[in-house]
Image 1 (cartoon, one colour):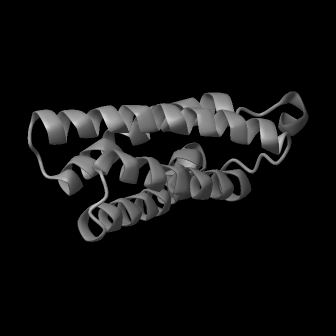
Image 2: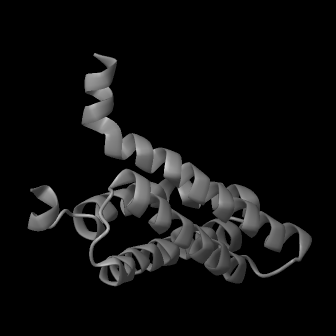
Length: 136
């Protein structure tokens, strides 16, 4: 039963684990830049998200979806999805920090939670959609 559930939800489980690693990197970099270096929260978010995107693509490509064809094209799509997520994250941060006066670090955690679901769906069904050659 557990094996059946794992096989059914393998992609989302691994995406979650990889997402935690990537989000962890994103969060640590963001927090370091905002709290210790006192960089602007939007600039810090852009840099930390790009680092997370790179790690996430590499791990998802090699261990989760195991789709290794058309790497440049898939990374371009993944990056585009990530940049859309980054814009959504920047909007959430701006609303939380500038409009609601919430803590920058707490706001980043909130943005990560909201953006993860959006990006999973886009990456599963667009970026890592198997080609006919991969499904044979």
